[in-house]
Length: 337
Image (cartoon, rainbow, N blue to C red; front, side, top):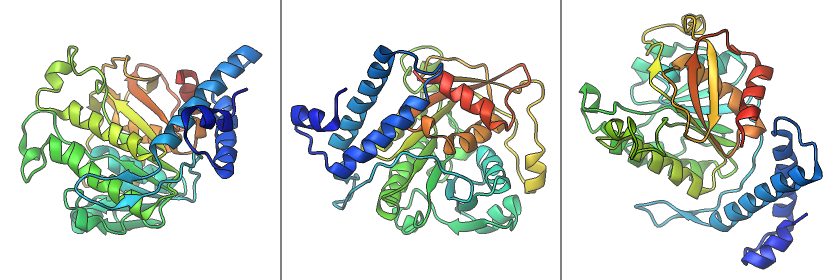
């Protein structure tokens, strides 16, 4: 089987002994994510060779990452691993529809949450003063307000976003470019500086980011919302941060406002509780429940096999996995290409 040392000699990428060790750990973890299980030497070799090539490519691109509009450089250590309950998670966009649900679910599962918000009073009215919840004020459009925002966190979930077409939410420089790209660049730069050993960055993107020249996404992207979300995805990849991208369809169920956390935890998605999961950007879900997106985030955090992947999420008729980790594990594993 090809080794990182061999790949290094061919590609010219210098790979240290410790990097090789981490890569072997990643490969072992990667193999566990196949479904059905690997049953032949040929399929095992193909899967591991693909992962080794991907890891080599990551090492080649992640040595020093420079963010736009700054001359500072950051070294990012790749460390794919599950983010288990008890870890600290920075939730960006915590007062939004998905963000509120996600915050409630993380706290209920035993995570500590640092919620980034522009208005502390508004955030407290939505989220209360739950044990394990830390409210911090910052604005992704203002890089200076994000200094130290990710210190001590194990993972980041970014739920920010705006409407695809002009609306009241665009007021105050909240259009797609600022909200779905430039603000995210500021956030990623802060994370690189504060948390070089971050275990996971989950970004709530959108279905269609790879299909902006196809219907119906040509229309949805008329003002650039899909373009800017796609640019954020690429920026995260280029930064070398361990990531998972979730790409929901049209969001339903919510957004919830002025609810306490216990109320949020009781929210349901009617009869559409079954979940569609597909890696890439080929699925065209009719809609996606915000409850499904929030639960999908929580589950993906605690699974190694979701690292480095992008999934479309959809909601459909049926019972669905609910909060059952084994069922979510099966869904994600089956979706992995």
